[in-house]
Image (cartoon, rainbow, N blue to C red; front, side, top):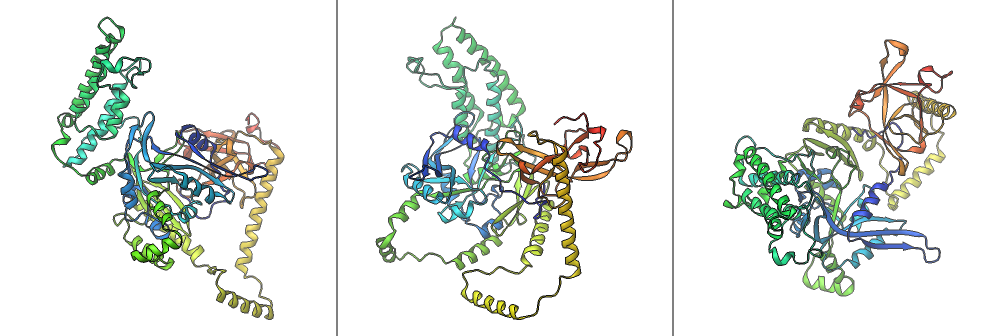
Length: 617
C-alpha cells in the first residue's frame, strides 16, 4: 500500500520481532558474540552475535550495479554506497559451497553480524567483535535497519547490492524464450530447470534414503567399496556451484546414486531392489524432462565460453531473481517487500588502517604520499554528481521487483517505501507525488539552522531582542484558526469514540482481522487489523472508509465499510495497547480483503444493536 508521508495517526517505533530473533539464534551456526553488562548490578547494556554468512537462496549474487538490488539514486546521493561495485565484486568472488535445501550455501570467508543491540554501548561491543573476528574472515556483512544506517556508516560500513532467486511458486521451470537466446542465457536456463528436475527426482525417493550422504560412522566400510559417493544433497550443491553445463553431466552423476546402492547391497537385499525401482522411476521423469525441454536435452554449455557478466545479465531477466529479502514470514509475498539494506566492511582494509593509526601511521602515510581524508563538502558533491547518472534506464526511485516494480522515496535520511506496482509509469508517478508532497510540506518550510553555527546564534539573539521590544503579534489569520478548530474538534471526536469503546467493550487479545479504533488518534476512524504480532503486541492497521449504505435486509440504511483503495492510504504500524475492538460483522467474505464489506456498530450510540449481539470476541 502507498505510504503517504502523513499517516492517519502517529506511528510508534516498531520493535524487532521475536520471531526474527528466535530464528537467528536457532539457525545461525557457528554463533558467538559478546554481552556488555554493568560491573556492579550485571544489567545488560548491549550485545552482539556473529556467525558465518549463509544463504538458503539457490542463486545469490553480490552486485551493487544490479537495478534489482534496490539501490536508488537517492541512496547514492544521501548514503555511503558501493557505487563502483568494488565491494560487491570482491564479495561475489568469495568461495561458497553448500546445499540451499539443507545446511545452506556457506561463505566461509564472510562473517555476518546477525544481531546487535545496545543502550549507548553498541559501537563499543561491535568494535570488540570486529577486532576479535578470526583471520579467515576477510569481509563482514550485516542487515541494517533504517535508524541504524548512520551508525554503521560511522563505523566504516557501506551499502552493497545483492540479488537472489526467491521462488514465487513451487515450480522453478523456465521455458525457452521467444527470439534469439544468448549462450549464457541458455546455460542459466539449463541450470534452473535442472534444479526442478532434481526436485522431481527427489519425489521418486519414497523412503528418503538417497537425500543425504551415507553415514560412514555407522556404515564403516562404505568408502572402501564406494569410491565416488553421491546423494541428492551433493547433486544440489554441485548444481548451485555451477558444476553442470549439460544434462548429460548431471545424469551421469545422478546415476551414481542408485549404482552405488546396488554395488554396496548385493542382489536379494531389499535396498538393492529399492535402488532398481528408484532407477526405473527416475528414468521416466528424465525422459519427460527431455520431451519438455528438447533444446536443453542436447545442449552442452561447455561448447562455448561465456563470462560471469553475461551469466549475471541472463539471471536479471529471471522474474524470480530480485533484491535479497533476508527474512520474512512464510506466507508473506516477497515481491511486496523492498530489498533489505545490506552493508559490508572490508576487514583486510580495516586491519590495515589499524596498523596505520597513531603518529607512526601518520608518518607512513606522509612518506607514501597518501592523500588526506576527503572533506564533507567533497563527499556531498561527489555523491550528488554520481546520483544524477545512476541507473539511467530506470526512473528515479524505481527498481525492478519480480513481475513488477517497486518505488522508494528517500530524503532527510529516512526512506518511504511507496509500494509495489505493475509498471514503471505508476511507480514513477508515485515517486513524483511523494517528492512534491515533501517539497511542499518540508522544503518550503523555514530551514532549521545548525546550533553549532555561532553566527546564527548571534543573529537569533538580535531577532529575539527586537521581538521582545516589538508589539504583540497579530491574532492568527481566520483560515489558520478554522484549521486549528477543526483539528481540535476531530481529535476530541476521536477521544469520545475511544472512550465509548472502552466503556462498552472489554479488551481482547484477539485482534487479528478485527475492527478497532485508535487511542490518541487525530480523527474518529475505524481500522482493520491487517497483521497482528502477539509477542510484540504489535498491529498493522488499514483504514476503513464508508462506501454507501446497505440497501436491503435488516441492515438496510446502515453504512457499508470497506478498506481504503489499494495505494491511496498509508498503513499504520502501532502498538496493540492503543487499539480497542468495536463490534462488527463481515457481510461479504472474499479471498481478497479489499473486497470485504463490514457493518460496524458505533459504540457512541445506545442501546446495543441486535445485529451484533451474537458476535464473540
